Amino acid sequence: MLLHHKFIECAKKYPQKVAIHEQMTGSDTTYSKLLIASLLMANKVKHYKSKYIGIMLPPSAGCTIAILATLFAGKTPVMINYSTGASQNCLYAQKKCNIRTILTSEKLLEKIQEEPVKGMVFLEELVKKINPLEKIKAAAISKLPTFVLKSIVSGGTEEDELVILFTSGSEKDPKAVVLSHKNIMSNISGIMAILSVSSNDVFIANLPFFHVFGLTINLWLPLFLGSKIVAHANPLDYKSIVDSIRKHKVSVLVATPTFYYWYLKKSTKGDFDSIRYAIAGADKLQSQTQEEYLKHHNLHIYEGYGTTETSPVVSTNTPDANKFGSIGKPLPGMRVKIVNIDTDTECAPGEEGKILVKGNSVMKGYFGDFEETSLRIRNGWYDTGDMGMLDDEGFLYHRGRLKRFVKIAGEMISLTKVESVMDMVLPEGTICCVVEIPDSIKGAEIVAAVTTAEIDHRKVRKMMAKHLPSIAIPKRFHVIENIPLATSGKVNFRAVEDICRKLEEEIK
Image (cartoon, rainbow, N blue to C red; front, side, top):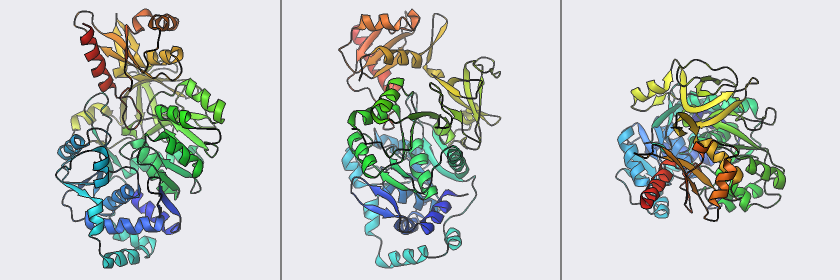
């Protein structure tokens, strides 16, 4: 099934239902209006020569229309990160994917204080060029039977490209991930098999659509169901997001652990009463955060796991299958196995190794990078680059990125595990990040970045020593008031490492 065809079905079934409410403007866009606007915009997009159309817009009706219009026109949207270094990201995407046109907004550029890049087309200008006759024609076409509408817009097969997304680049340069209709449709089917979601649910688009978590769960899943989306342009406006959850009775909430932490700080009793499913992903969910939500809101946050390359959900805990400390069971249709990092032999239950994933949600590949694709996908198995284990009941456990393991004195130390121990012993409200700093004389050393200076370093190390070997305890603590985060809420490890490296040099 083609996802933009499924949207047409929902638009015809629920024409007067609100598809998107925009928090910033307070405006509502019905499914019928969304369809008409997408048909109008498709007539403009189809004249652009490149097959790939860049889209750099925050969660909104405008961004949704741009995505649908691009697909209606038989082209592929390439989602561009505007949160940091937007101009550089545009240039990178243009070069990587042979993009000529980037759909964006003058208001967005003003907000992020970026200069236009060659090839940018502003939605505000496109809208001005639409004449009354075009509007009448699009409205008339939207009234045609569903099967006729599907034949008018671009067709194809489920193997066709649906979107290109870029990896976070938190460890190295971003890779362009090609996801097909089949990839995301398979992920949606798996989610619907374990969660009872319907057109009656209300989703909140609190994550940008250039982030796969936001694109699949907060956009395509509700459009597939015919649900309402409450769109927030600024994912860091935590208080407004919490207010929207209460006001619009949001029932499905997905977010990163960092965002859940801040929602908790900005909330009062009753704010989350409408939530049926609260799922965390992208980083490790700390037990303290879970406990605080249960204590103050009687809300259970279910931890899951996924990657951009898997569209994204690989596994998740649910009300029917939940085990503390795990990242849940694999979705129906997803196969997971753990292999030894040295021999690639499959591990027995309880043994740690690399997490490999197989299923229809696994990406088509990296755009223009056959070598990297062949390294990461072998015999249909995608190597996530993560370490973990499966228990005898089929629950998956995440032990951290393989690249976030450091060998010291012949032992493999998990920086993720060091962080989890630090979270246990640090004062409440302190965020931490642990990184490896190479040293030409001493070899690798572990240092920690924390968000407050009010810490007794000696006491913290002594408490950590109860849970970790001495070689795993950070040698120094560096205070970084605002630990760099991506818009998704994930820690930008490269940026933290760069800051700590500079601070180490200053000490020397």
